[in-house]
Length: 592
Image 1 (cartoon, one colour):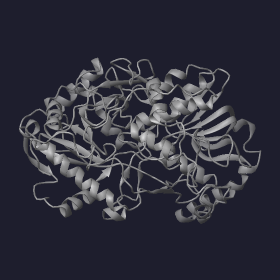
Image 2 (cartoon, rainbow, N blue to C red; image 1 turned 180 degrees about the horizontal axis):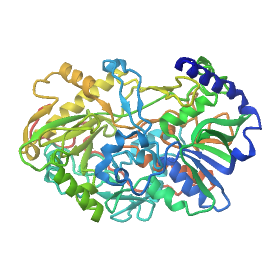
Image 3 (cartoon, rainbow, N blue to C red; image 1 turned 90 degrees about the vertical axis):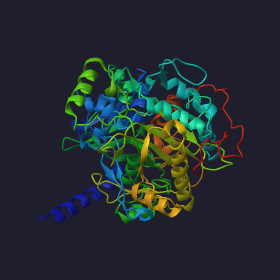
Image 4 (cartoon, rainbow, N blue to C red; image 1 turned 135 degrees about the horizontal axis):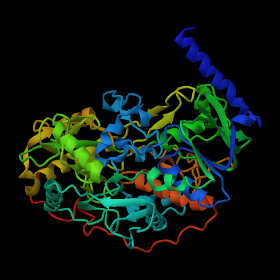
């Protein structure tokens, strides 16, 4: 039989199975598990839910995870500095790619997502950023009642165990350990001083009273080891007899009786199984996999479902719509002094072995951090309600998702606009759950996004020319001195931009016709079915998404359990003294 014929028959078999979603005889007794809650995905949100829902010993919880466990012996997971390995390692990674992006020269862009216990918290750079207070106030204005900053802050605190202890903003006794960078590389201090020289305020805690400005960044690192949500939430809960995880279990469809979710069909070790849910099915696969599973189950836009041979069960036009992501670029400079991470690569094996041995023996040294110890948030233009540019500073220069280091001492500032107006989609390629979905972020489909990204480059160049950082510079590597007009900068952006790994908003929370879930994560027009992950964000937040995703799961867990929401916070939030300006201060050196 030809390969094409085999694939066609396999896809047809999945189409024939879909009508069985309304039948009660899903699987033989020997291939069925039963629980109160069936959670699809042991990622950043799923691990939180597994822990919180199993706290009640009367609840039986089963988690279905398509990937493997996160083994204690795999240093690529637990050594913070090894983060680039997992970004390109298929064992723990869905290894997605976008469809060609028409506004960036038809580039197909890599989209790594976690496929392992802990999900993308095992692949990410461990940067802990909650978002701006205005992000959550905007959520409420967009229809997510009860999700204002005052509502969300208590759940950030509940989740967090900060090394500096708790206060009005930080949590001190939660599951998720958070710490400050400790690399000691002097370029970080120079970056923060350069930001102040450029007229931006210093913020001692961008997750607290004041996000805007430059200062230290925080990481989900505990005692020199990556602290994923698997380590924080899932593994401590596995000692409970009412919680189990099915690994390498690919969920293929949600089982429905009418509009009521009653379980999930999944494949494991070549066999088809059913996980029956007595109370609820909860999707926590993330902004790509959660809408994919809804679509595979006949829940989504009718026209699209029929186009891939799936009979619509529930018409929800917003499923897979509203995809939002952050793009970023790096402004790079050669460094005059040997104070970067240049020697931390395998062309210097004796140094790499030393770094590894020190980490294995003591969990300290260069192996114990992600090295993005500092960063900042600023405004693109005057009269912005909140900052909309994020900076990460790295005392090294890297290319191709960190897979290629620069051949010299260098440093880079990661920069990207945080409130893009472009919207994309997640769509099925076929009715076969083994086929990756069609991921189309539709980058730069709105013209304002390019204007903002050009401004990102200009403002980042400016900070690199401030005295504190300029004294270390031996010349700009990229974009390069010849990139001196808006048109040339736009070409550089189209050629070099890449995802910051923050897909979100594809099952958005709200009350309008394009929303997918209500303010408790319950899927519209269904019962006993929820989505709890970054896909339910109405709009993307400022910065990295792991912290707000954890908060979402903490908050939804209380609602699932029937608990009252935590009392609103009354902590104040910083406001700029000069909102009519792009920054509050005056730059010492201006190159904009």
